[in-house]
Image 1 (cartoon, rainbow, N blue to C red):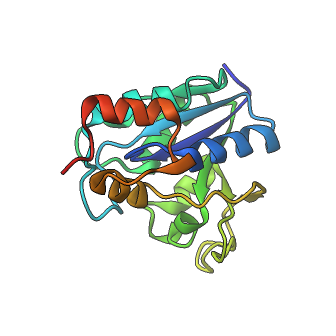
Image 2: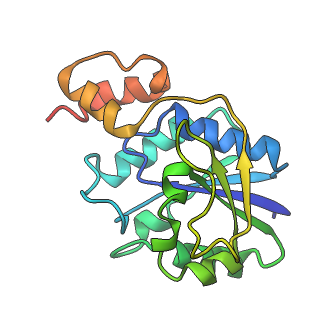
Length: 196
């Protein structure tokens, strides 16, 4: 198994260019051997359920990351019953790969509320964090966790795209521009996702 790997979790509802850019920035800048892409089942800090069923989000993730040989889609959270806590996933990965360097990749918006993640001190012992900067959002961790979080700030060209905005565009029939990989947009159209 790889000596170092990244972990990119999220609902991927749908997976977009920003997700791919985050994985690529971490892979390149941290010299990772692999990046696990882990679509969530039920995410604890998300206000609403994903609009696309899990099997479609997994399929779209496979398409979005399919040209990147170092990216591996991992369905463990989709298979898990109930809420998917990051610390549980990190424990599993630490048991499976005890000697590996494990880096959890997040956006600056998630960093701002990282102190709300379940058992963050244990999670901070199990993984390092890499944060992708976004315009106007701090890359400093919340003060309550700053003393024990190992954090690298990734540098990448800003990609202004969000799953929320993409879903809204799809619902209203507006173009999604470069926000969605073409293979993902084709899949969405074929399966008529995000229509209502």
